[in-house]
Image 1 (cartoon, rainbow, N blue to C red):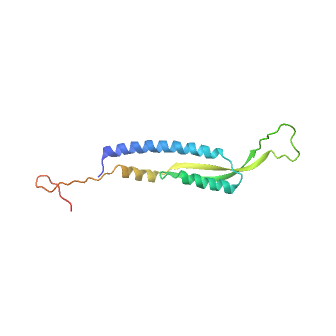
Image 2 (cartoon, helix red, strand yellow; image 1 turned 90 degrees about the horizontal axis):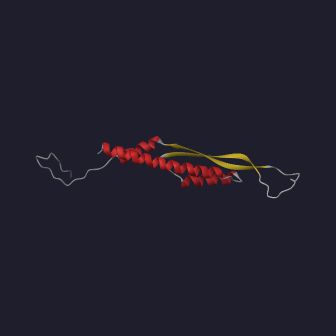
Image 3 (cartoon, rainbow, N blue to C red; image 1 turned 90 degrees about the vertical axis):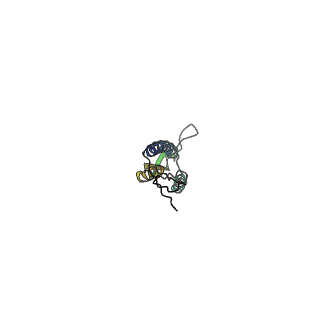
Length: 132
C-alpha cells in the first residue's frame, strides 16, 4: 500500500540523508584531492580503496588519476645545486560526485510503501476478505 503522508515523510528524510551523505562525500573528496602520489600505480590503488570505502548507492562517483608538476620544497638554506630541478612529477586523484536520480527514486518508492497484515476474518458487514 502507499500512503501520501508516509511518502512525504520518507521524501523529507531521504532528502536530509542525501544532503548529509553528499557533504560527507565532498569532505572526503577534498581530503583525497590534497594527497599526492609518487607513482600512477599508487594513485590508482588509493582511488580504488577510496571508492570501496565510499560506495554510496544513491551517488555516481567517478575517479581519475592526473599527472601534475609540483614544486619541490627545499629543507636546507643556501645556494641551489647546479642540477636542482625545482619541480617533481606527482599524481593526484580527481573525483566527480553526482546524484543518481533513478536510485533515489527507487529508494523513495520503497520507503513510502508498507504492508498491511491483519487477522480479521470475513464478515458480511465488514467487507473484509480473509486471505489464505
